[in-house]
Image (cartoon, rainbow, N blue to C red; front, side):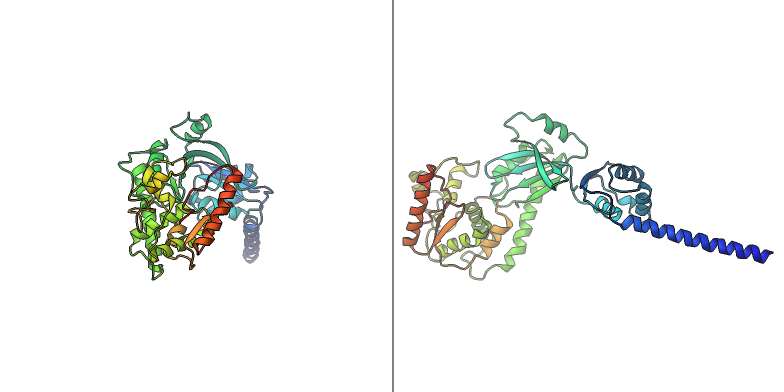
Length: 393
């Protein structure tokens, strides 16, 4: 009898073991198979939210088929303590495992709203924007220049949210004075800006910040980032450059940055200035003259006068030989790279070509023909917006 009972018990145990294995296999399959979403959604994880609450929210939003399976799978994988608060984009067909990865991988939120301070060459704007999950593109909700207009109510309401993300984006070619001025006017930052950072010392890129972040600490981050970029690129510089120090390279990079907004032209623009230095020619670049007038404090807002082109200042490269004494803006990585490794060419002239780019020339005769074409374009458009070193002659 006892043998029969034992045999039956063993059989039952084996059956239960097989059933458990089948359930585990089924749950594992449910966890990794494509999910139910047909359109992307933005899922928010509240600060301090429990795994159970997050699981229920995912099921409610249609991101997972079963909150219990998601919760059990998360606990089984040992990632239940890794949930990050924020807003995350869940793409169509994402499995529960994909969703868990999105919610635990860390870093910046991938959807929802964010406030961005964009420091550009002409203005600094606070932008409240929101990611549209359907298109995976940010949509501008409101935009204004801090300190010049009344703060929109939508911005104030959004900035007060505890999970709001903030970024500061420095655009290539903005000056250090513009950066300091914009940071002072950013209401989500704190602390003082004791002085304007050295020109060229700040790396143009985006910086994630917390609400209440210290302005001086942010400037220090920008400075370290620029130092790291220069340190990484300097050892790979061309061997025969007509400037010898990292400081001189940054001056050249800033001129290149102000001369062209066309990425593919940076190397050619660099070659023009390098060729001029090698031949003992003056750089004759309008942006340096403008910097000598404005000191980087805003934009000139008009064309240069002949008297200004003739006036002797440390930055007037129509008058002085060689480089000006300091950078004239904060150059980005691409312009620094162009200054350190210019494209090979025989060009010593360039002028705007009416398309946003430039026409390059080797001889003065070729250059004069290019200038004549540009003047004709100006006359036809009835707007003289040549700007830049575009006449470098």
